[in-house]
Length: 242
Image: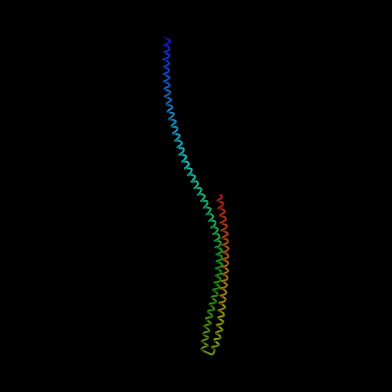
């Protein structure tokens, strides 16, 4: 009997322990389920966070690519502007060099033409002075001729009034005087003609010399322009190689 009671007590104790273990197991299962749910929530939150992070990374990468492309375009434009500016500078420098060469050539040509003009002025002044002298001499001869003609007229009138028989002699004398005056006037005209021909020859020689100087300056200008264009081409090829 006693053994039965002990067995029952042990059985009750075992049931109590089983109930306690079952309660502990239920509590553990409840906690496990709660932890599992929390873990699943955390896992889902982590997946959402990773997707959001990937989305933000993609957006930032896209923005970065846009900024980089914009900066590359700006750098390319600035390089093109710098290249165009250097090209324009070299072109302007070449044009300025050519213009300076042309100015120097024109200055030299202007000085040469001024010198030629001064010589021409001096020559023309000399010819004008000689022409004035010849005109003065021609005027003196004309006045002398007029005086002689008046004298001849008076003399002829006197002779005609006094002796009609001296008419032939007076005509002969008058004819001799007119012949002398005509010869003198002819000589003066020939002298003036020779002076004009000399002036024309000198002007022809001066014009020939001017044409020769202009031709020489033109050839010099063409050689200078050729050298300038060659140096400009060489400089442009050097800048292109750089």
